[in-house]
Every structure is written in C-alpha cells, then in structure tokens.
Amino acid sequence: MLEASELILNADNSIYHLNLLPEDLSDTIIIVGDQNRVAQVSKHFDIIEVKKEKREFITHTGRLKGKRLTVLSTGIGTDNIDIVLNELDALANIDFDSRKIKKEFKQLKIVRIGTSGAVQKDIPVDSYVLSDYALGFDGVLHFYENEGLCDDEFSKAFVEHTNWSNKKPWPYLVKCDETLRERLRSNRIRYGVTGTNSGFYGPQGRKLRLNLQDDTLNDKITSFKYKDLKITNLEMESSAIYGLSKLLGHQAVSLNCIIANRVLGEFSENPRKTINGLIKYTLDKLTE
Ligand SMILES: O=P(O)(O)O[C@H]1O[C@H](CO)[C@@H](O)[C@H]1O
Ligand SMILES: O=c1cc[nH]c(=O)[nH]1
View 1 (cartoon, rainbow, N blue to C red):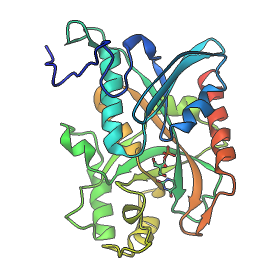
View 2 (view 1 turned 180 degrees about the horizontal axis):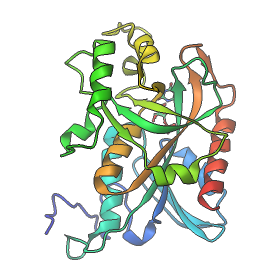
View 3 (view 1 turned 60 degrees about the horizontal axis):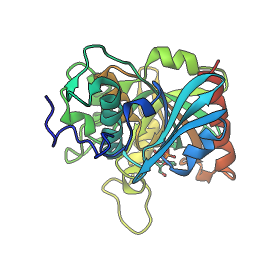
View 4 (view 1 turned 135 degrees about the vertical axis):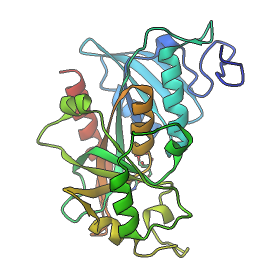
C-alpha cells in the first residue's frame, strides 16, 4: 500500500499536482509547456468534457472526430516532467482507493508539442523536428533505476568531443517510441537528436550578462557527430519524457516547433502561427 506521503491525493481523491481524477484522463495525451497552448489545442476539439487546473498544470479533455484526447500543460523543465509523468502514470495504473498498483497495465500515448531552437544551419525557423532521440543534460533519469535504457557509447563520444565538465550531470540518450513515431511521421517533418537542457540561458549557451563555463559548448554540440546522428535542436523537456515513459512502459514522441536558429541567430517572425500548424498536424495524425 502506498503511504499518504508517497501517493498524495487531494480531498476529492484527485492526484496532488495535476488535480485530476482517473476518469478525467484520456489514454492519448498531448503535453505542452505553455499554459496558453492548452486552449490553442482544445479549441480544435468538437467537445470539451473536462477543464481542470492547479499551478501551471492546466488540463482539457475532450473529443475530436470521436476520439477522446487530453491536452495538458507541464510548465517549463524536466523537474516538472518528473511530476507530470509520475502523476499521469498513477492516474492510469494505481487504484486510488486501495492505494495499490493495478493488476492490469494501461499504456498511455504521450505527444509533446513544444518550441525549440535549432543548432544546425540547415534546420530553418518555422520547421518541425521529431526527436528520434533525446539527449538529457538534466540528470532527472539518474535518480531512477535505468540499467540498459540509454546508449552509453553515444554519451561517451559526446563527453569526449565536448570535454564535458564532470561537475555537470552525465548526458543520457533515450530513443522515442517507434510505433508512435510511425503514426506521426510524414515528409513535412524532419528527424533528429534533441538536446534537453536544464535552463534556457547559460545551459543553452545564451550569454546576456553572465559568463559561461564553456563559451564554445554550442559550437561543439553543432559539430558533434556519432555514426549518422547529429544534434539538431535544444529544448527543456524531451529527455525526461522519453526516459520516464520508457521506464513506465508508455509510448512517447516529442515534436518540436523550431522558433529559433542558434547558428544563424534567427527567431521566427510568427511563432504562434508555426505552433498552430504543428498542433493541427498532430491532431490530424492522432485522429486519422
Ligand atoms: O514551448 P515549450 O513547450 O514550453 O518548450 C520550450 O520552450 C520553453 C522555453 O522557452 C521550454 O519549456 C522549452 O522546452
Ligand atoms: O532556443 C530555444 C527556443 C525554445 N525553447 C528552448 O528551450 N530553446
């Protein structure tokens, strides 16, 4: 039995941070960083059945072309993803009355629709990248037993190429779910390796007033190659989404809207329009 301090439920039996009851959730879930993006997704639904929120976690569940879908905001960062993935899984796979893990496992499909900055010249702003792999610079996965999940040879080559400081977490590489990737695939999408950072400024090599530990890190990220893989873009959630989904047995894919090109110093002139394009694309694919 899970103690009150471990599986934390609110007075109405909803899960602590997400404020959701098991029946509020569909098994296909779109996660977005920005709270305002939830309505940008759910405005396309034919009907919205559930609207709940707490802190940065806003959830709408509804139906589109007969398919039940949930869209949920995570806020920024892998620390929030640790909360969201664990609570989504609890909603699906733990009985809140008995506080025991259910005998029958329910698999969730999780699709991130997020913004991101490209680190390759040939990935233009306003394009879309599906993360075939996520490379985590954040360290969240190291707190879980994860033997055999990550490609350590890739990480070793990356650490050597970048002269990665041993004061930073060991970068971990996790693959997307191939079945869900197949479902979301098309020639409108590029594919790549997404670096997940623990911050937007220093950790992504942005220098405003503070000096960086390694001024050349982004150049080394751009020039890094392992077999036929190159790092394509940077954002702040995908590695923990992939890592925790794999450990929990769920399918996950991260779709990135490229709003910045860090090599060319460019930023999208209309990010909202580009994000809306990716939202429509994803909804079409999920309801095909
Ligand atoms: O647009 P979202 O989904 O928030 O994703 C990206 O944008 C945020 C930073 O501006 C980070 O969360 C990053 O991953
Ligand atoms: O450069 C960018 C753009 C969006 N989100 C990020 O995390 N980085």
